[in-house]
Image 1 (cartoon, rainbow, N blue to C red):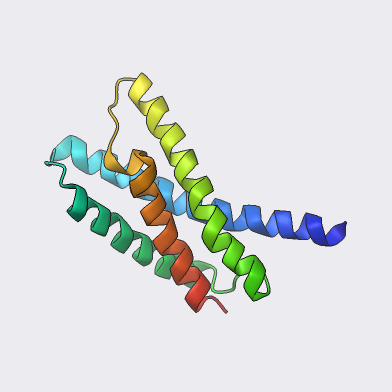
Image 2 (cartoon, helix red, strand yellow; image 1 turned 120 degrees about the horizontal axis):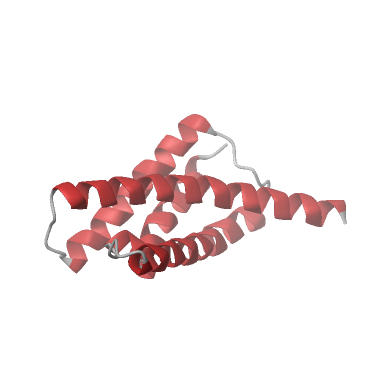
Length: 129
């Protein structure tokens, strides 16, 4: 039972790290778009979100260089499940912003949020000690 509790707690820790970085990215995108609205190009936007997710993964390694989970299986589960959970959370936040009249940006859509979180998870999975 302790093992399950520990795994869930560590999984939540990885989710929080991803969510914080994606939230900071969302805040940056929203502030930039208010100052300089840009035309939405899907392929460029997708590549940009993936690239910034990889950068965020690298920055997260400076703050937290060790993986919270030990073993290949649990770490692979993080790569699969945490990006989905983070993308769902960002989509919900995007819906909340839209209801407030703020407008939905690309980062608030599931696919782009997933690409950001996936790139971050892949960098952390590959390079975390």
